[in-house]
Image (cartoon, rainbow, N blue to C red; front, top):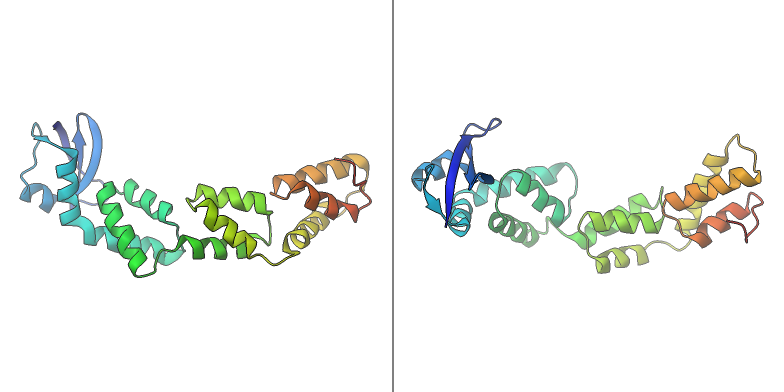
Length: 208
């Protein structure tokens, strides 16, 4: 069992309060749930019991907030979980919300990855896209499936377009081409794609 060491009102929402366990922030609860369950400073309570209280009293509120968060732009499951955690919701509530969003098909990491690849492929390479999607919580399998669906030649076309813009008003000397190569690599293009794009500017295929 753990001790409730503080119950403080939330600054941005006066109808909610923050619960601190053993001196550390644990979760947010509505004032109604706090009063209804007679929570008070000095009381001992398990994290599991707090999770039950929060799930029962705030699962619908959390779902509504997640929907609002999704209304602006598409999100991954990890992004929704991170959002709910920042709002003070415990994992049990996040699990409920995620499952409900899935059932309505409001969350689909595979579809998110496909849409992300279609947009991002216009300005960066597949290696960078892979890392960005991984950081957003999309699985390796779903990322690879989305990248496999990319039109053949898209990556080279994007690299060539970026390179043409980069080389505008520049002399295609050895030093500039080296910098251009590093520029394409930083954008997530692989070695072969970068070298093929540079070949149009007279770069030697064996140069780096």
